[in-house]
Image 1 (cartoon, helix red, strand yellow):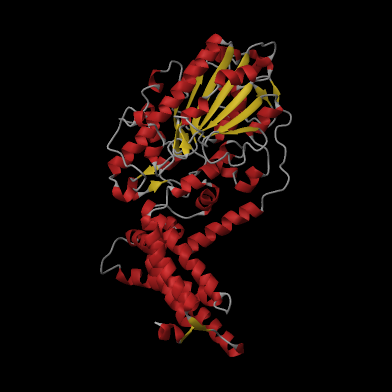
Image 2 (cartoon, rainbow, N blue to C red):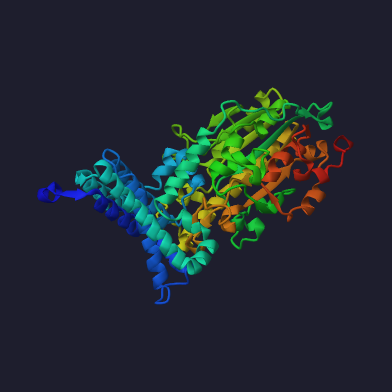
Length: 549
């Protein structure tokens, strides 16, 4: 062994071997998807498949050759091997793709959620595809290029690899172009280029974040519906997590996942709502901004105030309660409570996380202590995967058998679905409990109350062998982009703001999206400001008082 490592090996050979390893072993999911895109594995498709494989190897070889300098090559090769091993595991295990939003999700998730994704399969893949080759690279006595001749040789290898790859691409273009055009998701599957592009995009967005947050809606004031009122208002906005519309029985799902909400008088369920993104790190800041999905970017949203700021400018007390991994910057300038950390002897917590019912604590006390009208935002843990069975108390395991622990390789798709459906059943209970408490406040403490619920994004549960969420929006299945949304109002609230329930009910099936939320919240609360767009306010056509004329 020592004699093996004692031998000097040319840098071009090391680079070629690493390029071959990355193209083959780290990209099983990419090649599987590419074979499907190319029409399947057959004798007729072999030239296209073999040629494409060679193109990838040559491209990797050219890029790595350009970095094969002393003191640079080993760290770069080792980082790529380890990163590719980790990325290939999550792509293979969960059917995800790696893009900027996914990297943002990784950086901004909390430690507890991250640990749920660690298992022996990840350790084995990283050891075999990452650690062992990295050890070989680290110990190898590599002979690097010296002088002008060496640099010219290195440039020739890199340039020759690119030229040969380009020639092959031209020869195969007629057959290759349709597959790449119809299946653009392939670029998010090719390791490690997908990781490099995604990290670059994420860091570029973070570095572009402006230092000064631009004001928004500083002209906001309460409208005529507030004049002369002595009753307080409590408006609760519940931000769901990973709840997909397709799994709500209110939307036609055959399992009874919404037994409690289905009995709530006056509940308006909007059944055709699209999310702004497919990951929390995108959807939450997007939905609380006025940018809309088409105009949203992380830097633009972070560079201006949002909905909660506008409500505060109008004189409302705003509080964000969190049982998730934070508000992604949207609550930075309002009051914040973190309820995700367990406290001693709290039965609503298990292990190192707590159930969503904890978010409802002390609503009467909150009203009594409030100096004025309040908007309360509750950020759920909801249906966050893959450990769905950890998201609900034992009494809500109605559907089964369930996939326990989130190890999908040990579970049938039916058991994964059952565990997820139980999370929706528990969300039904949490929302039903919240509405009941708001109804009691309205009756016993003369408070006008309302609850608006929407999820941040949906979830894939094995449809087309895709799991979890975070797919690029243009490629994302409807399970990830269609989300539930519903509204409940006390009689006093709807009367105070002149909201016609019959009109709202007539709009239940209308195509809506997260773009409507910013403007609709301002509209339902009669907040007058130049940043409110009536065309996106779903209440605008349903207001029946002169104050909103």
